Length: 116
Ligand code: 5GP
Ligand code: ZN
Image (tube, rainbow, N blue to C red; front, side, top):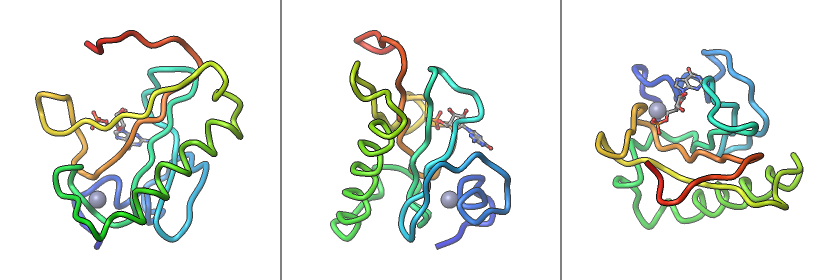
């Protein structure tokens, strides 16, 4: 479903330019406009889902596709060896600012734990 007020729906549809690194029928991966690491990609479903809190069992295959795309991109882009982070923020306390489900794929440096 397309939400005309959603920036990530527009990116997935090619209506807003972005640096897309991978796309298929279910998933789009593109570079974050404000990278927090040498590699910072966002992985989204094409379908508008506001956040992880709105997923249902029917989204299972799409989620598998998101995760396997992330591991493949980390490998293909050469930042899998040292490790990487794959995270999603849910709601304002976690810092979610775009309400279309997205996973941050971050790599190329060390990350602190616990996160801030
Ligand atoms: P959140 O804070 O919701 O977890 O993450 C939203 C992310 O989307 C941020 O890292 C932000 O830099 C990125 N972002 C917001 N608007 C755009 C945009 O128009 N294009 C791209 N490529 N990234 C965006
Ligand atoms: Zn959307």
